[in-house]
Every structure is written in C-alpha cells, then in structure tokens.
Amino acid sequence: MHQDSNRRRRVAELLKRELAVLIQHQLNDPRVQGVTLTATEVARDLSSAKVYFTCLASTHSVKPCVTALNKATHFLRRQLMDRLTLRSVPTLRFYYDESVERGAALSSLIDSARSQDKRNETD
Image (cartoon, rainbow, N blue to C red; front, side):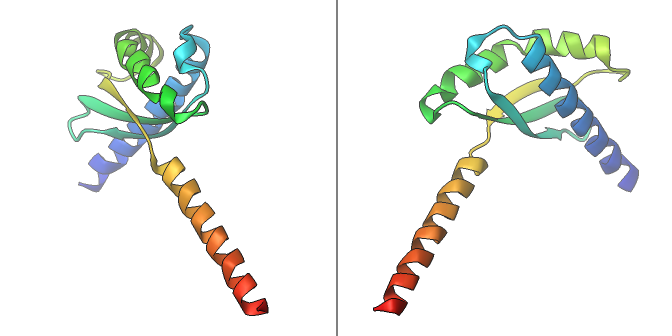
C-alpha cells in the first residue's frame, strides 16, 4: 500500500516538472503566459491526473487560460509520451488553483486586523 502511494507521488511530481517545462517552452498560446503549476494529483490506477495552476495575470483572464490548457492536453500528453519512460501517460485535466488568492486575501485580513489592534492599543 505504501509503495503504491509513493509511486503516485513520484509520478505526480514528474508530471508537474515536465508539464511546467512544456507549457513554458512548447505552447505558443498567449493565454497561457504566466502559468505556474502548483500541484498534481494522480489517480490510484495512474490513468488520469488533475493539474492545478495559478496565473500571474488578473483573475478575469482565468477562464481563457483554463480553456487553452485543456485544449492543449492532447499535445501535452503526446509530448510527455516522448519524454517520459512511463508505461502509459495519464490523461490530463487542468484546474485553476484558488488557494494562492485565498491565502493572499487571508494574509491581508490578518495584517489589517493587526494594524487595527495596534491603533486601538495606542488610543
């Protein structure tokens, strides 16, 4: 059981690393400029993978970015087949990762609460 999860984790990291290079150097779509991969989850049977990403661009350009990445899955999967020594390359599905934005928003709230507490202490 432990060996299975360890293999899934290694395959997920390998996919994330190779996809980052492929997206940056092989995709010529302007909608995927500034994409950063944050996580990859591989199914137990290694048949599919969920790839999570963030965009450096503003949030209203997320939908075209998701569309462009999901349209490029066949190309990316074919490139992975050529690069990797896996028996079969998982099918890819891209999802926008909102955790970075939520973390920044929470950090901002915490900072504002701390500054308000300091102002209340001095009064």
